[in-house]
Length: 152
Image (cartoon, rainbow, N blue to C red; front, side, top):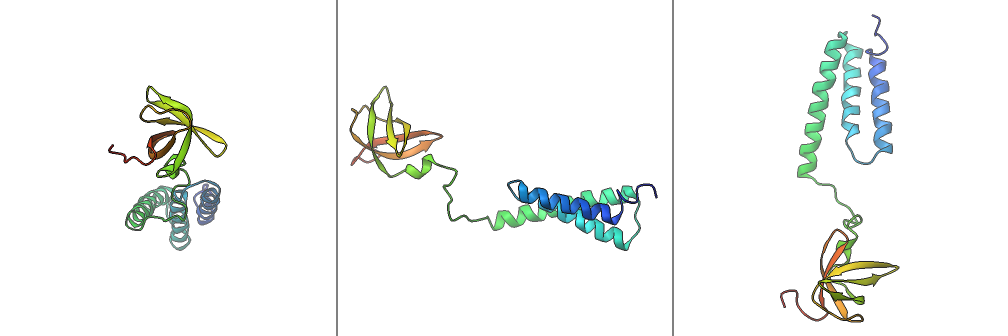
């Protein structure tokens, strides 16, 4: 067979290894399932002699099955993080109180948080006033005067 290496069992095992290495270097857990499908296809080809067309069909079907099973499992058992707000920087500030560095005029102003200046939206307030963050949208923080409720 001229495609013995490419579509032989070792070809599938090498593809599986490459996909597993790519999974380690790339974020997410997606390529791993294709790696599992390639490894299982390789095991099948070790046991049974299949034409390259049936090998590709097996890999495609196994890929759909592994991705589907993984999606179902992860939907029922979502991954938990000890830092769920890691990539939601603005959301981390909700409920905290800061001092306005620029007055809120026409609904916009700014506060200093650490070494950064954040845009804020809220009622007209002078610079130096304490404000509490009530929400966030991207990098814009929604604020109210400290001590007032959000509905006020």
